Length: 259
Length: 340
Image 1 (cartoon, rainbow over the protein chains, first blue to last red):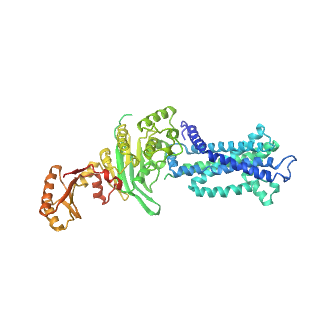
Image 2: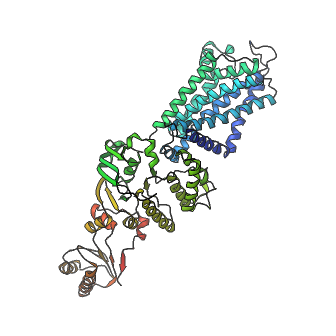
Image 3: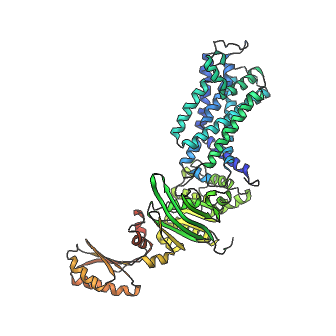
């Protein structure tokens, strides 16, 4: 990479294009908010009556659920990130991008940053919906910042994973299989919906190593108990996962063969 | 920009390319192309034309051989090389959800153009390709010709020194085609090199300094269009008779005696004489002899015409197959002359 090359202009152009296309599909954007709302309404009020072990009194299931649904929104949205790359492959647009001298990691950075920024906005909207439904959460600046930081890192990791799968799969059908295989097991083996102490031992062990649990736990600790995450055990693993998967996706884009 | 002296910018040595399942696309291609040339690549479908162009663009890599463009190995796929080349594919690689203006801006950024350069190029391309009317509309509302013009404009945003075009006029109307070929000539006059695949052989003849003829992956000719025609194409005299020719032997024999250099074919109501070494001055005399022989054999003639030697004729002669698509056959009558 030469230093005088306008790398950020490249990322900004890709960022802008990704956002333009998102805004031109208002129906898809709206439906992506309907799904978390339904989860909150159905799960939130269904399990509202059950007591959650080890939680201080006064914390309701809806309070517990909202940070989990915010993380779920990012997971579900991020897993779709690669679909746009497949569309670009199918109409040969990706070939055109690859034949330019633009740095491919910067192209990937523009794409991922646009998708992650959208997912963060969606997660914040879900949080506001949760508050509107009666969830009692700590919405001070630091808890909110910790939640957003963890969601951002998780979003980078999963958008990158989705893009990597898309570059390898090259078809919407294969991509749909990935989405189904990843999303549901990821959600149900995490602490997004249920605390790990109420899980069977084997599931609790899986949940402990599930990156979604990591994000949910950071968000929940911040939003329910105003606790700061431990960098070494909470944020650092997310930083490493996000960096590694992003590099994998960016390098795969760079080595993608043109048709 | 000014026209610069010729220098070799493309160098291919012993190139072999095979696709999966053993499909041989190119065999042992050696080629050198100078700066400031317009090169036409012609050949039947599947002859390896697009593969050759993709190899030059660095989109494909050969199994064997070396490809140098602007003195750099294409396989290194360097950013500097990509700034000098533009490969404009057959498929219009456009995002249907974006406007033409957005797409031009997007690729300006990806090619690293400064804001001012990008603005200047945008204005120039919109004017040159007459995009003003629809540039602010989304591409999914464009006609085929409009999309093709935008496709070409995007390919020129970074002012490539080497332009690789794969059937760029396929979606253009006759006016658009005429404009395109004029543009190609003016682009070459600025000191650039153009390599173009096209089935418009009359245009290739008039615009290109050299023609590469490909047949089943082999480069069977690399000469000026005039030289190819001179060496391989023969004028043909087409005669249509009123009735089916029954006395073929009685007609063939005197015709062959009168014009020994002719390859004569009699079929149904058609007589075709492919004549070697004949000048325009000799044609009336040959025609008179043929008409007289037909009269003597009581063969009534409905129509007769000369088909001038052309690239298609030469290609047919060299490969035994036609290269024009069926729809383009009607357009290739410019070299024909009615003598009735």
